Image 1: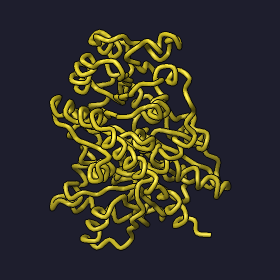
Image 2: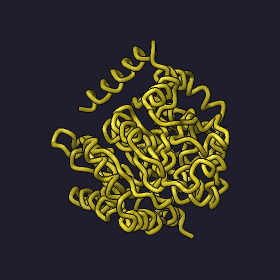
Image 3: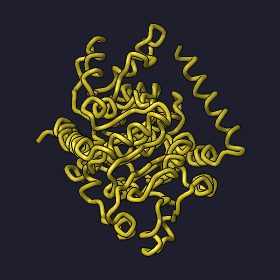
Image 4: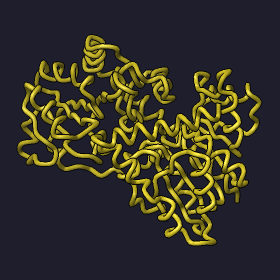
Length: 410
């Protein structure tokens, strides 16, 4: 089975090489790993005390960020090495100021893993949420590097809990300590005789809390939102917009909408603007006067959605009709009840918020309209859901502090 795993890794690499002929993301994935061991050797000085953090992509990095920054403040004698698997994380955070070194993760082969660890010589290694690279984990264990994973989630459907995947479970046993998000993960690992598990919660709640605390006020949003009910559709895909835009086009005065597509491209902006039957402006170019008159604000850039949620009353978060919902904690921290599509089951916060009435799942356009009517037609219901949303985030902050205290007791 290990041979099949390694063959699968090489097949994945071959497919990426083929995709890179036309796909820009695949091109960045390949180019970012070119001469990576040479560059690592040139960057890292012998004798440095390295703490290695690995995140798959941007979302996992943001999840791990409170832990990285707390450890950096507590133990400045260490150098921080941050690696990413995906270009969507690396390209946006390659200049992250709290890391001394930022690289792509080499392909998970036995030779690559051994070379990486030999060069880096990490004192500790940290993986975030779902990163279970077999060769890296086994090589870290062989090198006697204490290795941890935090904000982890485990489900019976994962390969290492299947009869044919028990060989992979050995890699999970290499972790010195496993910090899990929920009781279900804790119980599942206990069933397989893990006794190095801590139920610490989700560090993303700390991160969205930090973002909200530092969130700036946006003059353009204040011009757009004055005196109106604001519905924010964040990280939308075409499947979401297929029913969101018809709904927007039917609305009367007194309600305004913000649309922030997940992928900001000329094609996505044209797709949205051409379907709108209401007056709209783009965030980057709109004047305050135009904002006051417009019905719809289209977010045509990245990085502002976290602050924009401050101005909303209800949020729809996209991705639930594609590959999985995007962050529902970002609007929740500002007290926005959240609506999303049916692909949410891998996200603990979605289950939690549904259970307390801070979120709603819809399966089609009709259900979306019904839920919107419930909120807009019942101010008390909307207020209660709003309080539940912000209360959920505030109540569950603190995972990062607990993890750091465990790792660096004083």
